[in-house]
Length: 313
Image 1 (cartoon, helix red, strand yellow):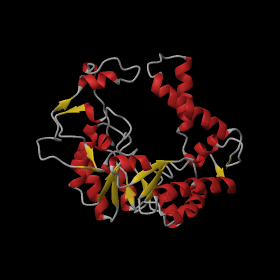
Image 2 (cartoon, one colour):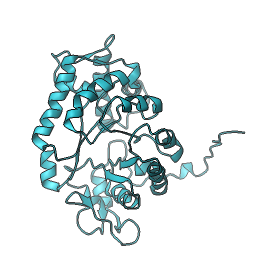
Image 3 (tube, helix red, strand yellow):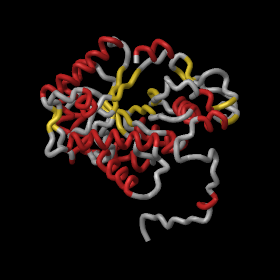
Image 4 (spheres, one colour):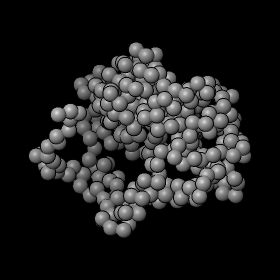
């Protein structure tokens, strides 16, 4: 993180640090307690699921795909149903990691942490109390984003700001979090919500004194769309960026003057649209994921589909 800050001029950083990841890195230490073989099952499923998504997305229907579906279900079981309990040594080890980050980054650099682990409210509060001295900018996705009441409880148990929302998409889905003031920071994604809907979500949050930081693990197209929306939204703080070490990221688009992120900022162009001319098909072709052999495949089979999706009859 320090190297990225020095190389790119970032003015804040965010780390992903899950309690289960610490257990994997320290297999001989008793950091987590859970019934049965829950810890081992989750770790194995997470490793398998990640490898499958990267290299085997084109697997045909059959036993291997069923195994992948089971792994996906395990990884996505909501945290309160796992009953992970952090041991005192687990809390110590986590605090040591964050203390080391602060030792390297200093305390002036804003530091947020994402996915702290599969924890329920009570152990989340134990961990957050340990971390208060490190002045985190926020702790992200401590609980599933639909846990409106639980976030309210957790917010009262810590002085560390909480953020969530990257898995929500519409104004209606964000409304319970916002109107109940369950978190001080919401975290939408422009690719889930779109520019106009994200703007409406941010404006509703502002009316309830809630800040907005944007989730953005995507291309320069999404980054520029996020920037345009962000500069028009007063409570916007920052946008995520997860590809500082991908040398071809800026090359995905053509006709943009220079790199998209310069000295930690996106300078919004006054050119039409998002400020670039075209997509660079050659770069995308070089980096297609397995199972997606066509760059711009036809979607004509969806033209006549009809969904009778409504809330009442």
